[in-house]
Image 1 (cartoon, rainbow, N blue to C red):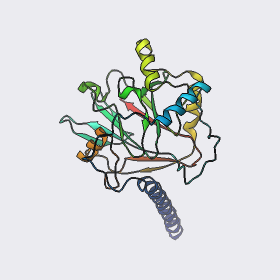
Image 2: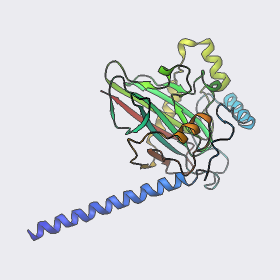
Image 3: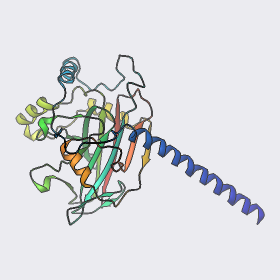
Image 4: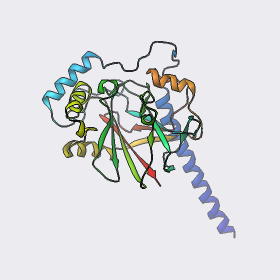
Length: 294
């Protein structure tokens, strides 16, 4: 009995040590992400949503497009400074629509049923570019963001300025949420945040022109050579922290910041999940969400 008690106590101590280590790591990740948020946000200021990327960035994008045909996901040739380039981070929250219309936070591992409707809120920690691809039950991935119908197909993002997918600004209510229907399956969503535009992937005016001439090919489908390089980054090492705020409703301040393109400040709710690249040299962060439909 004494030996059993000692073994049990040792196991308990080891378990608690593991819990404390995980908690400390969570706090480190959460702190690194949230401390880069602005201290305050002027929610009464002018809207920043639908702004086009800065001209300088646009020029760089055109040059990259002319000199390459596949995404460049290796580190850039110029020296990389940890101070100048913090590790890429992404906070995300899944909101589900209640019958009343209220959006509440739900766990990413939740099993969804027919008629459930969700929206994904994304918060990057850098100025960069956002791409979202969707694959259903292993089908070829299609790009659902940027969207030629929204914001001129732009995908430029700013640090801690939230993006919601799909947009609550869609003209029709049915387009403002992802709705689960039909046979059960798994929707796999790939969220890609990059420091530089991915060459070979149409965005902005190029995406609008492409979809205008090829409506049957939009959403745009990534060719194999492009996709293999993105998929390779799904195994890159990352640090993760989870906030147990599931069941909480989206606040009015969050809604205003979301729809007007204003930064989330340190007083606003944390993302449900925060992921940060383990290395500051990584040129992109790829997050995979498996949305299970039962």
